[in-house]
Length: 79
Image (cartoon, rainbow, N blue to C red; front, side, top):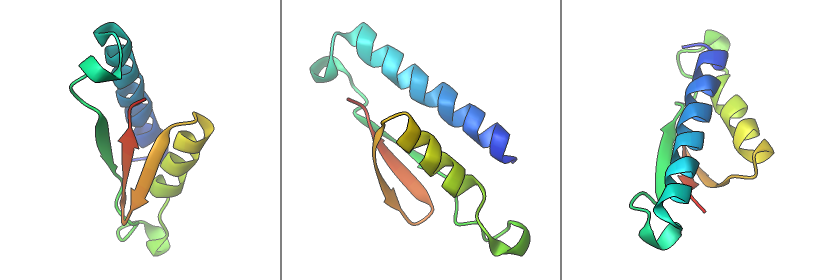
């Protein structure tokens, strides 16, 4: 998976959750209150340096998403 492909998938998923939240009439009525993005830690990347994880972190920060980071994954809260 490329960084661009991963970011495309993350963006589509994030926007779909936000649209569903709006259609549901608000957080109280929305079934999915958070979702997980698994990026891995870069173990199989060239040189063992993660490329997807920092790119996804930057995307989430840039969009103002509320998230917590665990080893190789992000838990994104829908607000």
